[in-house]
Amino acid sequence: MLKSTNQFMGFDGFVWFQGVVESRADPLFLGRLKVRILGIHTEDKGLIPTADLPWAYPVMPITSASMNGIGQTPVGAVEGTWVVGFFRDGENCQDPMILGTIGGYPQKTANKQEGFNDPYGTYPLSDYLKEPDTNRLARNQKLSETIVQKKKDAQISGDIPIALAAYRNSGDNTSWTEPDPAYAAVYPFNQVMQTQSGHIKEYDDTKGHTRIAEYHQLGTFYEVYEEDGKANKLTKINGNNYTIVVDDDNLYVQGSINITTDARCNIYAANDLNIEAQSNCNIRTWKDTTIDTSGSITISAIGDITIQAGGNLNINASNITATAAQNMFLHSVSGTAVSSIAGLSMISQTYVAVSSNTGTVVSSSGPVTVTSNNITTVSGPTLLLTSTLYTSVASDALIKVGSKGLVDITSSTGLVNITSPIQINMLSPKVFRPVKLTFDITPVV
Image (cartoon, rainbow, N blue to C red; front, side):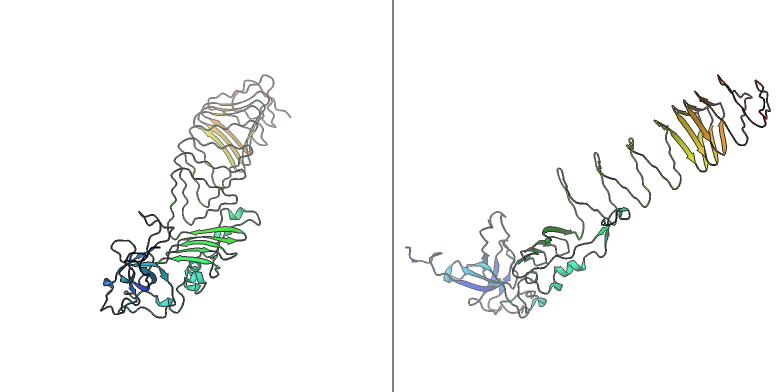
């Protein structure tokens, strides 16, 4: 066995110490501390000022590499912290090493003029006197002076609405609320780390109330908390939130997603924007709705398409084509007007109907053509077909022009041509003809 024959590290006597940190302003940024050591240094700062105290090196845990920035930063103690350590040079007591810090039960504030005190007079804090230095969140004491109370004070009051709440089925959620703070720690199961400014991390192993939480001293936090056998998560941003994904982003939710904003909601896609719903898709606005595209718009439905307007319905286009595989109806409880500056053509392979409860007007500065292979009906209390060129009403079967009042067929050119390969019937109790017809019409009594 080797014998201690000289003053060599490890072969001399082990000398340990306890002292108070008076400075942490290490010019070498190694986490060194100036420590006033009990039994070595006097409390009289006139004899041994803080600047003359030796630098004490912190000893880091084996989980920290302490190399090239790898591992935990060797800072944390503040002026006024009590520490324990040993002298690397043994009984010479000039090369202290710090093994750890020691908590206490402070009774009074610091005296800046004396040694073994915080020279700035900050620690211990006046509102932390006569209680353990252990964090209040770990002790579950004085919660009204912790972030638990701050979370309650910043909690959003009232319900947060869900979209289309007025149209939801009975029993469906129409709003949600911010959850209450989930804190329910029991000593000694909540491990708390708090920085000088008030940033906090918690790892709470309290049975039935386990939590993981991280809190910024200005109020932004997240909290994962146990509830009904599940681990819920609450994230609250007291400021702006930015999420940037360099590649793809995927979100899968087995339940519902509710997005509520008190301001504007913008969605921008540099490429395609696809929205698919295997059930209903509902869009509701309380003001104007604008759909604008530089290309085409296609609306397709296997079932019906209903367009309803409480005011006017305006459709403007270079060309308008309306095609029906079966019947096409234009109906108005007031007046119906179909007009064209050029030609107007209404064609159907089966049935054409234009009707109104008051008056129907079909007019064009060019030709007017109403054609059907079956039945053509243009009806209303007042019916007017007008063209500055010619008006053509044609059918391969039957054309019927009827009125309970007056039937007036006029032409500004002097010619009215009514032609049928089989039979023309014009029946009226009284016939008025201001111009000569090509054949006589005998009234039917």
